[in-house]
Image 1 (tube, chains in turn purple, blue):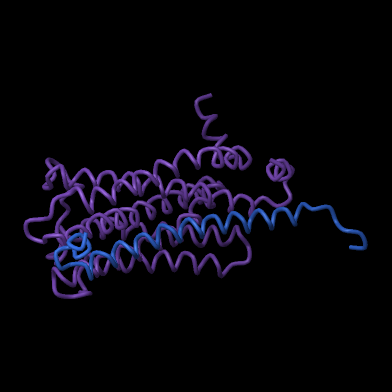
Image 2: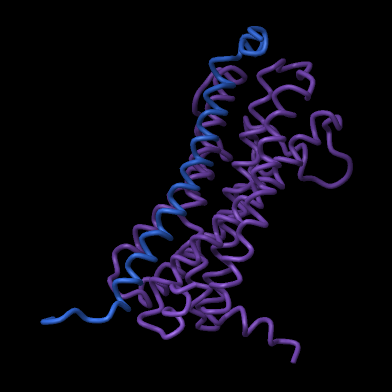
Length: 245
Length: 54
């Protein structure tokens, strides 16, 4: 009976109730971590010896960029699970991921541009990292547009899932672009093997924010998945009970 | 305080970056709650007992 938890998760009423109960436990820690992280990043962390105060953009840029990739992986894996095991809930998760991921990709691109101007002297460069991140945004938008093009949810699920899975190829390209090609963008200084390059006073606020952003995504996902479940479960009996509660 | 706001001369880049990110965070909350609210309203309409004369 080891798999019962998995089957329970695939049951809409169970997941709907679980998501509703879990949301505040993720949302409030996320809010505290993000607020604390911004304070630590803006006030407590020392200025960088090369970039001065300008480096503080890292505390909004890196968590946004990290989420832009993490949300896509979540979306692609959920889409694959939905396609392979014909699991409606997994498609609901994938559909819920897209607008969240797209918005954080925009945040990563805009904050990166605002960082690039003073440090590189340009708002935009057709650099491998920047270009592949822009393609990531188009993948999210393409996924949402494709889904919106179908009236039938099941067909939207299947077509969207194929695009999401194919688009997974872009994730390692974004991540390793700074290593594979000669990029203007700096190499990873946090997510790498061995010792990070940053001193703890700079690194700890970033870690707090990475955790905060991930919890924030989880909370958003739970709210959106509930909306998706409600839209997909047509006139089910449990809907009556769920709405009464 | 003004030194903090000046961000060592990088104010024109640091503050817009934070503003955009905070806007994305807040909008995500608004959008997610809005989608749940709309889905709840639609579900309520679907399971509502049919009105007389319908």
